[in-house]
Image 1: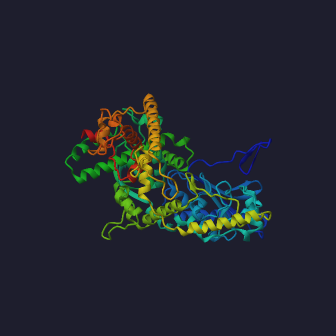
Image 2 (image 1 turned 90 degrees about the vertical axis):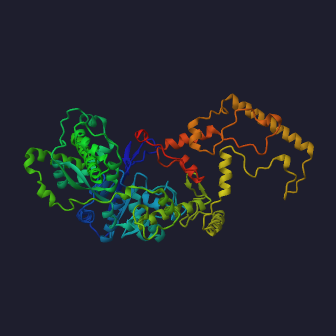
Image 3 (image 1 turned 135 degrees about the vertical axis):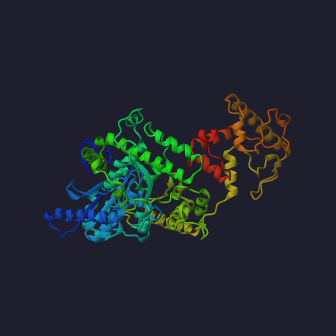
Length: 624
């Protein structure tokens, strides 16, 4: 067994284990491919690129807070290749990944001989972004090492790079092909526009990704955050994940805290919007040492004083942040995180020097943006506005442009809807996504293709031209209703029984005589009776209507008649009230409840049918 291109290769020829990235990680490789460059000068050139990259990052994202890891580069040697390599764990902040792509693309415009490959735990995510306009021969099974960024453009290695075979390329093969055939790479403006669509909002979006909020915290913590603002990221992650072993000392009756709630000050702290949403949305009972501070303020809030409510909100947020730093301080030494280690060193220095190094009130007042408190309206999602944006409707000009009303979000939502419409228009799309019927024919096909392949290519072109004729997506509501009624076991509205069918129009069939009709009706009744008996024996027809189900369905829900059906007499009455399958309703309600307020199959189906169910209220709110 040996390792080649990061894969584990077995000596007996068994399939290798491909190297995979951890979740939420992006990896990038930077190559200098210049035949005129001497090998001994390569390291010097790579170091120049690395220094320029770090300077670009510092200038572009000076005040940015990385979720977990920052942009970083080191020289790496592997399989005879020498290049710059970096891996960043972006956690829950997908914007960290796109900021790195923006920096790498900018870097390729500075160095003409620089080639960059970037991918994440999902694979070639740039090609995923451009999947709507990607060539037919390109599939996730063979796209490895084919997408490169050079001079700000997205370049694609053709199928000929693998000698016409549909297989993935190794890193060494890809680099060697670029060296020998740089003119053969494919550059598609359409693919590039799709792949780099998210980069259009950079670098202006970097400031918009930040959020400043006033919080009340101990003076020592305020001093540390002023010295190291980026430490807020690992602290909130520690609070957000909350290891029970680390949380237990904090909840003790007499804890020994590094940041006790004494000498409190109110300062503005800089978050990213992801970090602020994580700490703001968490429900967290105040530790015992904080409770005496909350009690008098909570009692005064009953008077509905806006000022007191703001004081309580700042104190609650500060309590969460301070608790996060307590958890971080107790586990910083064991964390593989540069910011956590730097925080531990700074905390040790502050504790050694004592309170004399802490900032005074006058010094705190001179800090920049010390009283800045940004609006939190972006946290509130108005689902009516969301539906309106999906439909492409704009807000009134007099309305405040926040949340889903801002220009960039409108463009993003409309792009999502556009891609979904393209998917619906694609007749070759299956349940796993857009599937292509034939992946064997492309512009880079080998010389051994026969006439049959050419004929199939012509057929594909004809199919493509016919597919292009239907550009708009039309939603057939009647067809959807029929499908839903069939799934739910209800009779279709236009159902016609054999007893009323007189002829087969358009097929040249003859009318059924009365004897045949009666015989077929009797067969159907017998089959239905057998199915009913079998379902009853399995308990599938035991319908137990419960009050809460009827309450959720509303006043229009008719209870099932417990008496015997008129079907025993042979047929049902035309004006008989339609029964509601309470088992189905119960399953739908349980499925909707299990979504916990998030998107899910039950909520989506009910919403498409025009039914909106209320969310469960918390027990505390019900008691109030």
